[in-house]
Length: 458
Image (cartoon, rainbow, N blue to C red; front, side):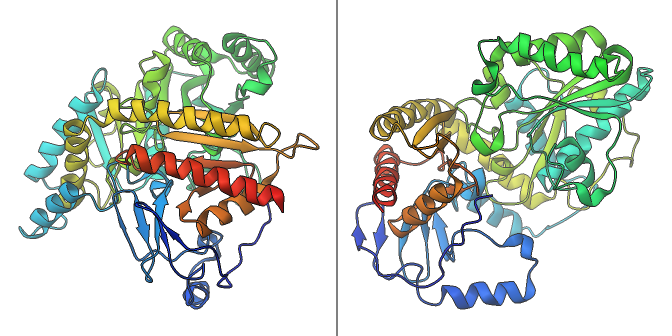
C-alpha cells in the first residue's frame, strides 16, 4: 500500500462544467468529514481508506454527491455496475418482484428462479449445464473449492490438492484466503492448508523471453520438487481470470498448458470470473480469451447489476456432487436477485454490450497509449482488455513503482470530476459501466492525463 492519506478538508478547486462532469463546490464537499467520522465510530476499520467522496446517487456512468457534483465513474463500484448504475430495466424487474410480494423463499421453488437459471446457463454456454447461486463472490470461490475436492475424493485422488497462482485474489473467507497467496492477509488463520499450492504468475516483465508454457513448466517443477505428484495429489486448478490489481492477463499458452495438464490427470479447471465476467472484457466471460473450456466458473460483481448475487457454474456431473442439502445458502436464488440477474443478461444481449465493450475497449486503449506517449517515464505499462484497464505508474528517476504518486493522481482526478479505482499501489484501474458513452470515456482519459501532468508538475 502507498501509505498516502487522502485529505478530508474541503479544498477550493477549479470549477468544472461539461456534459459529463460538474464540480461546483469545494472538494470534498463540506460535511464529508462528519459523515466519515460517524462511520468510523460504528463501522469496522476494514471499510475505510477510499477516496473521501460520499455518494448520494448514481445513474448510468455518473456518480453524484449531495451537493449535485457529478463524476464520470471509472469504477462501476469495483466492476459491479456493468449495465450502468440504477439500470432502468433492472430496477423495473426488482419492483415487479417486490409488488408480488415475495422477498425470500430459501430453497423452496419459485418461477423467477427457474427462469433465471435457464437463462444464465444458456448465456454461459458450453460446457456449463447447472449453476448454484449465492450472495457474495467469496462464497462462490469457497463452493468451487468444495466441488473440486469432492470431485477429487470421488475420483480416488491420494490427496486433494488445489493449485493456485501467486498474487491472485479469491476473497476474504477462510478457503478463499488460503487460495490467495498474500501471507500477511491470511496470517490470522494460523496455519496454511498443506494441500493448497501456489505457482508463480507469468507477468510480462517476469517472462524474460520465455513462453508462457515454459514459465508454467518451471512453476510445476517447483511442485514436483516438493513431492507433489500432479496425477495423484492435485484435484483442481483455480485461476483468477486476470491478475486483479493490475488487470494482467496470462499468456494464452500458459493457460492452455494448464488445461492440457488438467485433462491428462483428471483435474478440474476453475476460473474466478468476479471481475472478468458479464461482458467486462469484451467477451461474455474472460476465460474465453484463452481458447480453453473450464469445468467451473465463479461469478459475482456485475452478475447482479448492484444487488448481492454470485454463483458457480459447471458441468452437471460436478455441480451435482453434493447431496441434497449438502450445499445451500440462506439467501441463495431469492426472487429479487434472480429478477435482477435476469434483467442484467437481457440488457447485455439487447444492447449488444459484449461487442460494444470490445469496440469501446479499442477506443479506451488507443487513448491510453496516446497518454503513455505523453508520459513515457511515468506510465510504465498499460494492461487489460475491453473495459478493464490498469495504468501502472513508476518513478521516472528510479524506474520503480510509485504508489504515493498514483494515490495523488487518483485524488486529483476526484477533484476534477473523475472517479478511478484507487488500489493503494502503483496501479490506477479503469472499469467504467459498459454503457458509458464514447465521449464520456474519452473525456475521462483526458482528465486522467490532466491529473498526471498537474501532480508531476508539483
